[in-house]
Amino acid sequence: MPQLTQLALTQFKNYAARQFFFDKRIVGITGLNGVGKTNLLDAIHFLCLTKSYFTKTDQSAVRHGEIGFRLEGIFDRSSFAEKVSCVLRENGRKEISVNGSAIQKQTDHIGNYPLIFIAPDDTLLITGESKVRRSYLDQLIAQLDPDYLRNLMTYNKLLQQRNALLKEMAEQGATHSTVLAVIDQQTIPAGTYLHKARIKTITDLIPQILLLYNKIAEKPDEATEEISIQFNSQLGILDFEQLLANNQHRDILLHRTTQGPHRDDLSFSMQGQAFKTIASQGQRKSLLFALKLAALHVLEKKNDSPPLLLLDDLFEKLDEVRVQNLIKLVFEQTVSQVFITDTSANRLASNLQKLNLPYQVCCV
Image 1 (tube, rainbow, N blue to C red):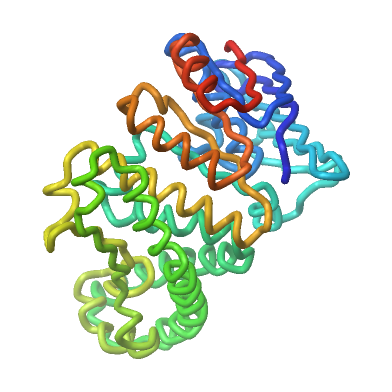
Image 2: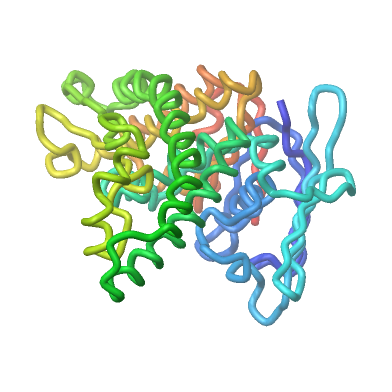
C-alpha cells in the first residue's frame, strides 16, 4: 500500500514552510485550535486528489500575502518510493508531478493515491442538499474509474451549455433548435455513463453502509433500527434520450435541465420516515461514519490496496464508546495508514494506546 512518509508544505494556508516525517501506520496530530492540524490533512488531500477538501478555489489555499504554494510528499510503496509534488503558480496554474514527471491531466492522477477524509462538517452528507451526496459518490467513483471523472467533467460542461441555450430559447420564444439536438446527442452518452457507474458502485456500497452502521452504533437498540437507503434517479425509469425528449418543453419554460444525473440523490430512511428528521445526533454520526468507511472498503476492494484515511477532530465530536467502536472497526477491517487530529495530546495518546499498535504523535 502507498504510505506517506514525508510531507513538506510551503506557503500553504497557515504554513510558511514546514516539513513532517511519518514512520508509522498510525499518525496522531496534535495542537491547539487554529495551529494547522486540519490544514495538514488538507495538504495530504491536495496531493492525492489535486484539490482542497474544504475550499472551492485553489487560490484559497495560498498563505495570506503570498502568490502560490508548493506541496511535496514521499509515498513508499512495497518496492519503491514516489515523490508527488503539487505547485500552484502565481498565474493560478496548478502543476502535478510524480518523480519529476509532469502529469498532463489531473484525471490521470486521481485514484493512484486513494484517500478518504472524515471531517466534522460531513454531517451535511446526511442533512444537506442532494449535491453533497452526489459529490460523495462522484469523489468515490472518480478514484475507482478514470473515465468516470472525464465523463463527469464533460457532462457538467454540456449541462451549462444546455441551460444557457434553454434560457435563450425561452426568451426568443423558440420551441425547437438544431443546436439543442446537437448538445443533447453529446450529453446523452456522458450522462448514461455516469448513471451506469453510479448504479454499479451503489450495488457494492449500500450493503456495506448498512453493515457498518450497525457495528458503529452506540446503543444496542440503535443498532436494531431498520435503516434503508435508496438511490433515486429518473434514468432508472427511462433512458436518458427519452428523458430529455419528454422534458424538453418543461426545460425551456424553466430555463434549465430538469432531469438527468445532476438530479440523482441518495435518500436515507428509518422506520419508514426520513432519517434526518427523526434520527438522533448519535444515529446521524453512526450513519456518517458508515458512509465513509463503506467508501473506504469499496476503494480497498477495487484497488487491492487500502486508501489513506484522514480523521479530523474525531475525538472532539464523538462520545468515548462510539470512538472505540469506530477505531476498532477501522483497524480490524483495514490496514490503511491513518492520520488522526486532536487538540488534546493526552486524550490522543490514551486512545491510540488502546489499539496496541505502533503509532506516532506529531505536534503542530
